[in-house]
Image (tube, rainbow, N blue to C red; front, side, top):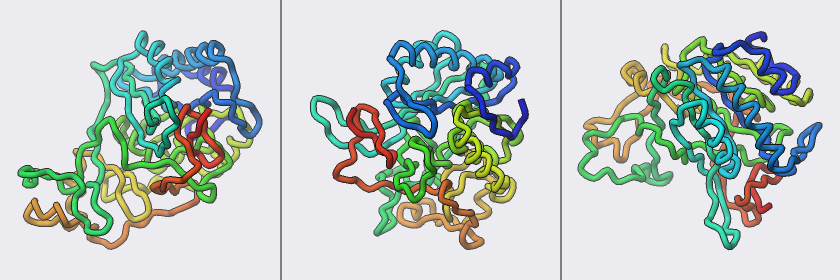
Length: 335
């Protein structure tokens, strides 16, 4: 298999050609089996067939991942519960990451407001992992921190808190004008966060359901290699064209960071010692409560293309996040 290419192939055929323990990180965002129409196929299997198929490629993902590597799987909670049954036997569970999404009450159910990302280690004792940080949440009008740190403000980190297993700061691509012709497109900063916390420059990231290339674009921007496949030839062309336009330039100084427009979305904790020299940091430390750090060289230059943009969604009357069925705008609605 060639690095930095996207193949047109069935995911199982593709994975079976990859040598054991040769990939640093695997990320999968498979079809949700919710009767969704893709470009050239229909996502509609009975539960037993779908689960059996998923268990096959899950085993392959673990096989090809290095002992120090990670496996990330994105889906709705219903299917992630099945995935855990298979993965708990062959890998080490680390986290169920809750990725926030907009929801609406459906009746006779709790309000569903998240996608899940399973995080497994091939071997926890050898796992490569880096703590990452995200910017402080602030009031849009007064710029004051939304969280009250009380008497602990002197210990506030200038950039922001460590990322937990609940992600509320990154949001799905909501509007069609910012989407490709794919019903389940993920935002690039989501993949960049995953990559920053689990890989080093030059590592290889694999995605067996490449879609329109989000994983490949994120890897390329951060100086990582990638490999992947999609069963739909149309998506292979779209994703290959996207990656061809990308350069590995998502850096400040010598540190790889996740950038969105003129903001930094994610940094590694260990890189702040270098990165702090590129920012004006409010002093004394408690001043961070109502003053943001400012990049010394003006606005960060980030190329914005339609597929790379994401925005914070606003509630819409007829969008329903429940039962896991997405509409054409990417919102989950009642099944």
